[in-house]
Length: 359
Image (tube, rainbow, N blue to C red; front, side):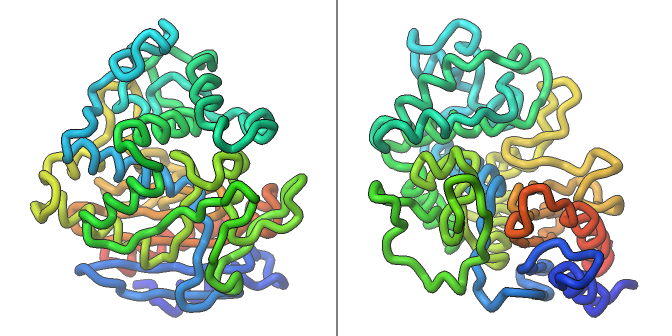
């Protein structure tokens, strides 16, 4: 049986610039079972409470969660189509796309576009309406519902839909959803119109990212360019948080799925079910699943596991039925976006973690 000592050794090597396994300057791994952390291991440039740019973990931890909360409150119906929501403003090819399809990456949108290049040329107040127009006029990659294709664009659109449904910013809607759950989860770090994030914790407590062209120091600001152009609040990226905050949200969702308040168990369980309406999909409304042999979740991930990766070097994998899971946070992009040491690290860490957790 692997030990926590072996797992710590992996993390230490990953954070060591002199190691051939160097993957990131800062590494944190949290293992969760029985409603609490089994262990929180750190390596490199981290301290208790270090915040990480959670990148695409925003999709399940914010966008899917907020959609669930709004649906439970009667403010949203995931069966609604874009045509039913926005009427004739939606082009014909997109009128039938449903909220559920967007949540499951089955809306037909391409994976990514550099919308920030145009958005940043306009005042912040105009960027969301402009983004909506660009998304609605974006050529689809394939017919909606015909296949699953991981898409930042679909989640950018979801962010706008959720803001309309909630009547408030996505950051405010997320805070309300977390409040209903009774958790202090990850939050956005909005960027003010003057380009500043306002009052902030000591930057020593935030793992740095970058640099990128035009942004020589990315520290405490979202790394994702499209989210940055939207002042740090978007449906596909923008959350900052600790490993404990990520785990707290997952624990709360598992508890709701098991029958605890505040929302119907069936609705929370739906977050963890694979989309069977889309041919070949291994996605759920918000999560990925380790259905592929090369999955970053590890070859021994238990059946029923859900999770997600983030471009900055973060990941979470969870077994909802037993409420056990692992959160791995790194700032691998601090070494440059092309650095790929995170790939073998993820598989090794997650594989060891499942064994330590008793699978």
